[in-house]
Length: 249
Ligand SMILES: Nc1ncnc2c1ncn2[C@@H]1O[C@H](COP(=O)(O)OP(=O)(O)OP(=O)(O)O)[C@@H](O)[C@H]1O
Ligand SMILES: [Mg+2]
Image 1 (spheres, rainbow, N blue to C red):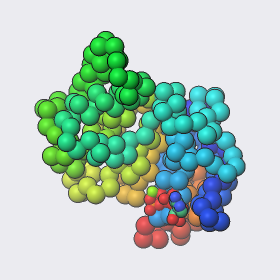
Image 2: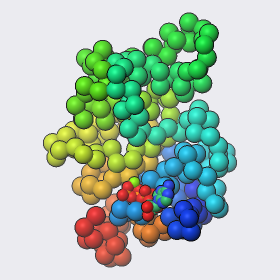
Image 3: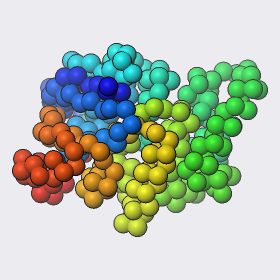
Image 4: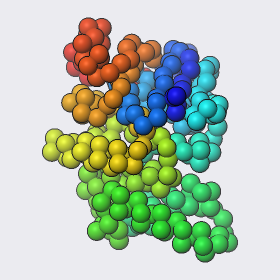
């Protein structure tokens, strides 16, 4: 049974067809990579899935509910969260404060003036739990803006984990990291998210990392699905090699 099903999604920007009828199924517990050259439509598809963009055509189903066009917070509350440079806007806050605020945001309580103290304490608990999961306890009281990039990326994941999602979306989790940091991040994602039984949909340009993480791969090219399969199947696909793996992306 698919946890997430994208069905024939189309999205254009001023006449430019960024997604030309994309279908995709992510099964429960799998690590699913969405790969493709720059401009293939990966981030656009993530934006459609998380409700930041409404598709022109097609549907998005999550946990057997049609979530097409739902606002992002409502999607998050159903258990679908995205980690993408969430922490950066909170540069002057401490790591723990940013996580607590993120948790309050997910539970819809950020802007309530007289929120009950209990919900605040619960948010703090969840924030501390997420910090422990990503191994950033020692950084709890540091301002977000002072974190090295590798820790900031872990914090981005923690910011999504406080929503306690069933499906986590990561858009280029390794971007900007050094080779050594990329290895550490791959191990971190594998260890943490497998242990949590999380379902993961991610994009990544680093082919080695994709092969190290993914159970299934969908290849997007010019807004269309070019191929879908296991890492072995994708590696052996001549069309894919021509369009992407050998294409310098
Ligand atoms: N808001 C927008 N307005 C106009 N065009 C857009 C918008 N968002 C994306 N596009 C275009 O849609 C296409 C797909 O972009 P998208 O960001 O989804 O690609 P991507 O696969 O994520 O690429 P990358 O690997 O570089 O992140 C690109 O041609 C892009 O310029
Ligand atoms: Mg992108």
